[in-house]
Length: 240
Image (cartoon, rainbow, N blue to C red):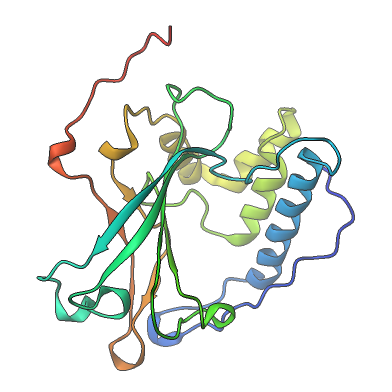
């Protein structure tokens, strides 16, 4: 497994499950979430130690294709049940969009990889649902290029992030165990995707999010689809 320095655990304000939305904690979920944050923090510190002159990169989606200025407009024909929060009819917000590759920051874009699309809405008024960001003036949406995440159990994800970057046989076996057969298939689908442009593929949120409050709240997932006008370019196989 990847060694990590002896750092204090990262404190998390963990949300309380909402049974009205069908939420329930997995066995050991809170402890696993804290462990995930601690392991990732330690791995980044080891890769980019202080004083090394290296610029520290994100643990996931470290390679950005670029950031775009955008405008977020709510469709005037949105169904009333979804017209809540930032999706209320008539809403328009300035936004910043970041497109990215999932894993290795120095691999050429021609190689297969998962892809990410994240966007931040700006100047968003009102109280936010996240307890530590109630007064925030922005709202984030995070999506990737597959509709399903490759691990279902938080404890398995701890084992995955500890082992997947190591090439020795015990680590590779531990990674396979943490994924399971379905997770291995989804991970393969993630990593074999070859695209000519991030503007020409579909992205999904991998987990549900709460939309609205009170009696009208619901659990939803998001997807972003390109306009047909973007077309589809062929992907060259000759990287020269």
